[in-house]
Length: 187
Length: 287
Ligand code: SF4
Ligand code: SF4
Image (cartoon, helix red, strand yellow):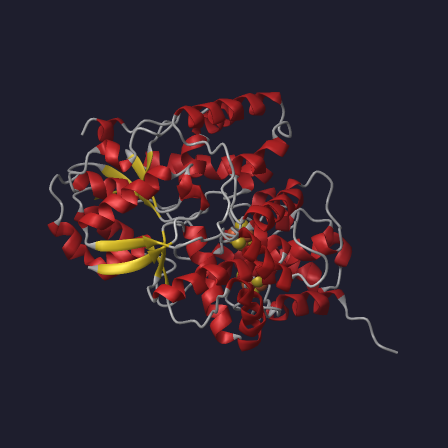
């Protein structure tokens, strides 16, 4: 009978995809949490997330908002005495939770990332207005009005892109991506 | 004349056009030729790594392969683009299987990654390749008495790329001193601007922006100098939001380091894209 891998080994394997990341060697010193600029907003600090992974507690990890608060600033990564790339682990958890479609309610991050990915697959370049507009009302009317004022001011200064740019060889660009995505096709 | 491939990145096409024009002006004065990469694509930013690592590396690999055709090192003015392309370059060199897989895909566009060039950040090219002394020689109207907070942000120094100092870098301060400005002490100079959290987790991002602005003001800065379009956008365009959210009264101009260099070299403000800010840099407009 094949043994299903534990959550922690699953996570470790996932993180080994591009580079090694010895999550198991964490000494729980808390350097990552104390150095993280968004730790105060996370329900579980980076150190805690690692402790939960090592205890194979899949549920609290996947239900946590921690990795969606991670801004990928790598401050934790460069300071960890055990050489763990915590920022890389947060990326891994984002991918893992999207893959399992286990997204905490009210999380914009996952939707934002998917939208971004689809845009790049389609156009090859990023188009900022299309990224922010779906969330215009998420933070309420006051914020919307402030954002609209910003957009208008940027427009007046000639800084607001109105049309998405595309690649010259977009068909070939999609051809490249289609060889990486083995099934189905890119938009 | 030193020549490089130049990867402007999506933001510099419009939102951060002032970074692009000031880069071009200053590079020309410094004898650096920047040849824009032909038909480049988005580097994937952070968001693409959230979805799929392999595709994210493929996006960067395509740009690297196009640059390899020119034989010139690839320069990015955006810290995010720089970090992504730097590490894809490094990973693919170390991992032949990954490179083979991606090369199979790149054939569709007649491209090949072979790892023959290096990826550099614009400020690094100015500081290391051109050199502080050489820059000093081009200064015609030094920024005497201007107190500038050197804001490094994250990805230009992190994660560590080769030998650079990730805890106490000094090159930005040296550069500012070279053009006659006074770099202020700026304890939060390596702190994150919040990146895309400004869209996805607004309150957290605004807190980060507030701390960065307040810290610079507390240290007497008249302007923050930045090396990344996303840092510029977050710090500048969301000051009004910060003021409302926290009852502060912040109004601190945020300029690209290339704009400050250009001013010191006597390039007219307008040609450096100055005047397109939401927080007007009065001292610069007066020059
Ligand atoms: S800094 Fe490294 S060793 Fe310390 S708690 Fe964080 S992950 Fe563990
Ligand atoms: S990379 Fe993420 S977890 Fe690490 S310090 Fe930055 S925001 Fe915190």
